[in-house]
Length: 193
Image (cartoon, rainbow, N blue to C red; front, side, top):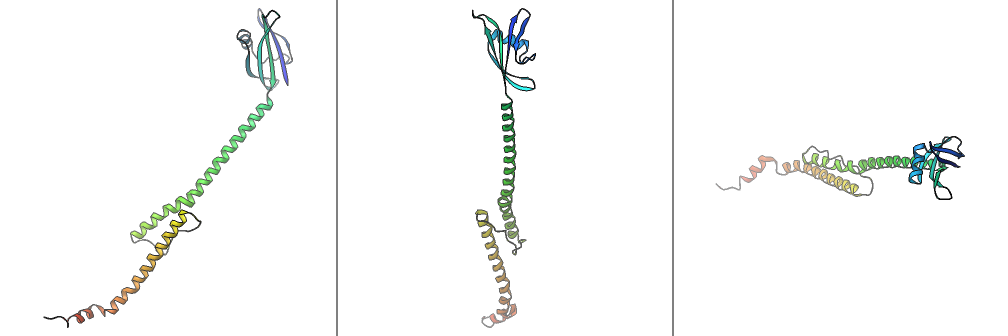
């Protein structure tokens, strides 16, 4: 919709001469005086409950003397709706991006950071002698964290096997020597006084 309004300069101010807006005016007296004095302006307004874009400029007579101000108003509902729609889309995209980012952070934390944080804890426990060698790090996937966990688990299995060998060989060392007294008895006859 396009609306027109012509205001003529009178001694008392600007007087409405003709308008397709009826008695509504998109520009107040001060704005009309400013356009008459300074020239064209573009502004926003509202008429008949519709958002309007308003262009106002000086109207001159045949001799070039300014006689009034012509307002041309265009319904900008379509543009306001599109801007509102774009704002809502951008807001939804922002919220969606935040949700996706939060989910990524959660899974990265769970699948990368947590296993990396568990590894030094298990190694400290083993180094202090408190570690449970029957446990290992969870292995799943095909990435560097999985390779680290797999290497750690192989190390723990090797330590467990070594511990088993040591515990089996300790009793056999005592038996093969015949106990501490036997070793001393075997070494005495061969010593010279």
